[in-house]
Image (cartoon, rainbow, N blue to C red; front, side, top):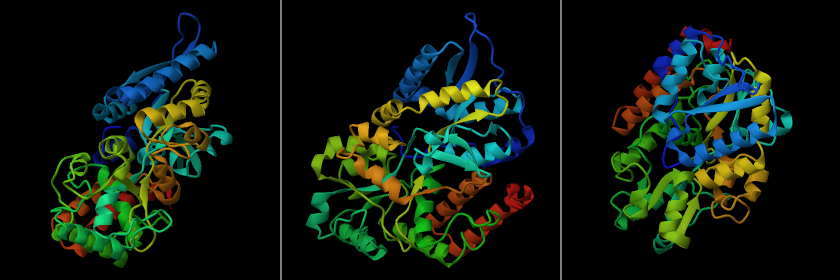
Length: 429
């Protein structure tokens, strides 16, 4: 997973398309020459050989394990995947099995692209909560892994500058974090922390809305899912926006730089707010001096984003029982461990984590498991999320560039609420 961001998904402009196209009789499977039912499967993994290799292994093992079904996978480049899904949905030609980025699942379920997953509870109960997608009190998707963000630091740099090393049980407070940034700037780091502001797309809500939530705000009122008013523009959200803007005004963070973690590896920045996918390369470069630290507690506890790619069954699948049989087969710990150790992602079950060379009890990446278990927050489970995501990104970028915080957040709330109202509350009223 050589990327900083959580994978992007259907853009806000496609929400109306999703709602209007309905669901056709997708996934009409055929019978093979040897009499098996062919199950079509799409993944976004064409650009990720490590991920694709595990899928190919699972499919090979499943196809050999029984005489009724043959799974046939088609892999798309990640950049083209969502366009292919939208086009297939519009023409009623979705595959039986498809992967999807977790936060978009409620929109696809609401638009009737997906059917309830109906996997055995012993499977879904064993997964990390952030690896299970729920809409309307039903599970529609489930995944083999999650990702987590942390702050990378060098132990030697913190010790040389008299900065306390935080722990999961005792993270930095906001005051400590701000003081650490000031100290590191005074120590000669022109930009003390790389927070990835040069990235785009889903990185923004994935990385920065947890900071908003740590202040006590949120992207939407999760009690009703009908408005962002008060959550995204209330006093706590404004305090977050002013603090976030201050990171750039004070020179603690930069809106330029290189996508990835190279500036930290090169010791050009002292801290890096980045993800598990950059951890092994950083360990290789820095060794035992690397610290994997929790995010700061900005007032309401540390928070990080949760929810990554998951699997669903299309509502038009001609043989949903076969699709479920494949998914049940695929959620074995041995496969989840392979995903974790080849992609460097957090295994979704404790059994898979225990068997992992990186994420087991004494594994060098074990802190990410603990961060995910303790601090992960799902992005709002609402069909409105595609609009919420793009709206928050626009607002946060404007705030970064010096816009008035209150008026910017008020505008974001108006845009989100207008979308929710125009879609009759997405079923929440």
